[in-house]
Image (cartoon, rainbow, N blue to C red; front, side, top):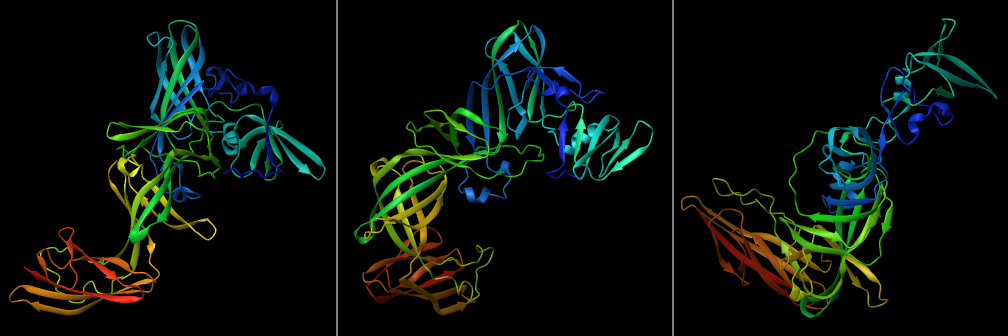
Length: 517
């Protein structure tokens, strides 16, 4: 394996032999590494259009260690001008994404769709590197420079090996091994190596002239997610109002830039078949850019998904994340705050027999959780299909007017008229304690009864209501035969007790559940 060159070891290409680097040429491997074959090169794209899929809820999950393919994917459409001759043409586009799915590439003429057609297409991603350059020049003449203090010594010869040290066969037949060198001068860039990922087509054209063509493909490394910013204004008795803002973050790690692109975002879970994997470049760092211009997204239903179309064009540089407002800030949405003590025993759903172990489910957490809920409806000043994302909630400190963060949660794709429930954290001044006070098992009569006591202590200077949510998990047939507080049956296994706790006082809930089988 060739030893990587250091900063002081540079690889120099002779300028006189760099015909490959000039527009209108493309690398094709031949017996001479520097031989070229003429190719038509499409001009930079006049129009970029991106439809981006694969929203993610949290960019931090993809920062630093994630592979770009995990971010999402996009359909890229580009219109370009290209000069074609009559008959057969070789066409190359060399500013495309590095993470293309080659099976999705298409090329079509907008000028002469019936008279111009593709015979063959290729995606080349064998990018140039020091090791590949030297490997292509084995059995070809090169010259190597080696520093000796302030002097430079040059060795000419035929390169016969490049694994580790360089091995040269010199004109007099001797063989020289060079473990240290400062630079290698090559006659040209070898055929078949490219500096950027490229798409190549063999195209037959009915007539010569400039044509507008459309190129389309799917690529990984493009994705988007939504961040919601809520400002809570508390009201009496657990009521509150909200200001709701939403920003879309579009990440581009695809290996290409898209200047002045039209952007569409698809919200929904689109089924895809896994494509064969190939090596991907490492995850780059993020460069943040915030867009504050007008003309935001227009939303509409599309198949079983929702489509958000940006009303203006914007640029997406490679290795960047751009933030764009999803919809104008909404004020006056009503909401409710609640405190919930939820028992979630770490036990499985009963199988063929009831759970008769009296200690099962005890010792569970009795933390009182703080929840926020509101309805996504037109009557509540919303009624907007909300893509999945992270919701951050803040409250204004009346002492200085500053917004202070009070919690966050994630939501899934939420259509109109659905209720959102957000867990913001755990209450500091309201404490819960849950214990079993009685358990009776009658195997002969196939029944058991369990009595639980929940104590709630309120250290606030105002009364609170705590929703005690209990899961009756021991068996499918159950009934509550005694209870100190009325309850609501929420589903086949869950009941809720609303418990009022006075200011700086304690309230106790007891109930007995009987199971039969």
